[in-house]
Image (cartoon, protein in one colour):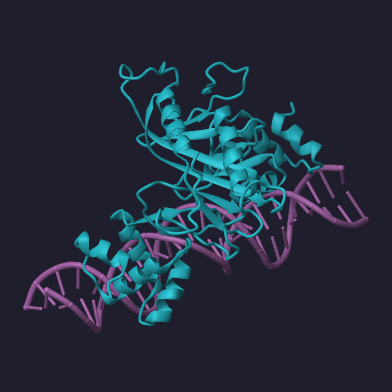
Length: 166
Length: 166
DNA sequence: GTATTTGCAAAACCTTTGCTCGGCT
DNA sequence: AGCCGAGCAAAGGTTTTGCAAATAC
């Protein structure tokens, strides 16, 4: 069955090889921000006839096509995630490395206005927060973000989406 | 004469060798965000008896001491700038690569509040805007940011500091 | 059929490190 | 004399690439 990312590839006229299909599936099913090595392992589990060079080539291609976005959270390896329409940002737990996504519409407006004041139109932005977990009791947050490391809840329909609404 | 960065090094008890003094001077005089290669070239111009390994070791040391901050604006090379007290952020001109700094106190507050809502205390953050220059005439900005590539106006006392005050 | 893509291994790239020598205290 | 830092070159980790063989359209 055709995965979501595979559909995007086909839509953009990419030649769909077996390897690309596998990588597309892995990406479609990922709910985190895997690096190339991790993608390679997951892909190899589905089809061992794939090399890491192909994974590198594929993520690069998909990034050029706007299907993936490359992230750098430090640690020397690039990490990838599917491009989303509504931009979101990341909060990285400095103790565990867990990545939490969030959105904030007020923030988007603020960034637009700052760019405009500096004489620029905003093309894109990168916002990453690094934080330390507060005691559950000491905060007003509901603590609903789960403990599975590096989870990436997203999408309005999914339960557990972390969104700061304002 | 003792450069600003050299003073900071001495204050933290670092042994000041000739090479460190040169790197400290280069950093003190830099008004941009040089990478190691660039620092090496500038340092070598002042004293050719310096190796790139020493520059790497020095920036790493100064980063550990909190004197420098490492930045990654993409491009695979780390770039460095002296630590500032008031945190600032960067707007990168996507056409020219020029880096403009800015601050926004409203933004600081917003970030604190977002982190808190997610159940975290904010340790640090990274904000980078990527933008395209608007026509001078079409914007309300005063266009005062200069055309010298990669300028880094900063510090309250300096004219030309780019600061979004709100 | 033909242009593209893959696998493999080598190369490229940035950064770190082992070791010996040199310089400062 | 003793230590710490510097230089050099080699190693390290990630990503890219050249080339021949395989594959999609």
